[in-house]
Image (cartoon, rainbow, N blue to C red; front, side):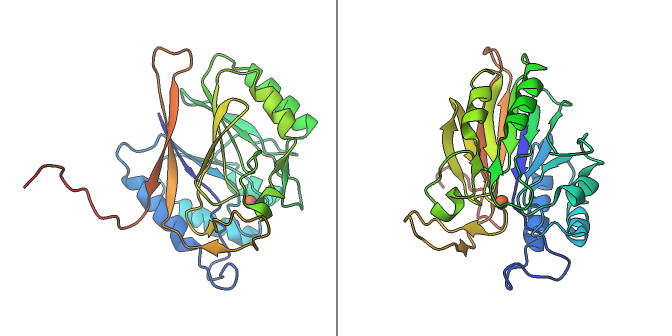
Length: 270
Ligand SMILES: [Fe+2]
């Protein structure tokens, strides 16, 4: 099973620019076209938040138009730039989301179970795993403890070294770790928010941040570096799970670059 992850698409109303200069829409269109050409086609696409730049209804209308050509099914999580009310309206036909409160849910249709954790805090740039959300996650994981599971959330619960992003990461990480450590069926944690390809371990699990398909947060590891972005080569993550002799199978992550890439070329000598 292959799960494609896209994230932080920051879609504006049609014709509007992010930060006064960046048209994010063609980057999502290119990501959709790229996914549709992958062979094998991913079984599922997950979109891990900051789908829009401001959460406005006309932004979600634009998102739906851009996602319409996508061939595989897609499920999504809100980020701090989205708003739960408009997000719920935009994606309620794709996933069984709660009618009130945080938009966390489980996707059960595939051999790899996806648990989508909405860690957003309304009106705030940071995320948080509250005691209530940790209880929901414990209950949800315990309900299918024999099934291999991938957990997704917007904000990473770990320090990246990019200071202006670390102050708005996911708080309550100790509560999250305590739950994940109890569940060996959780094979990994995948996040967005930082707009970069980042790999680490969290609670003894592989953990990653998927790059945005538009702009990258600048790789600035000095503590006081001001917030900025670079236009790096766009890419997405492909999480590949396969059944093997281990109790829950194996999961790994590939980075797939989007755009006009030179190749393939034969390794054979001419
Ligand atoms: Fe974000």
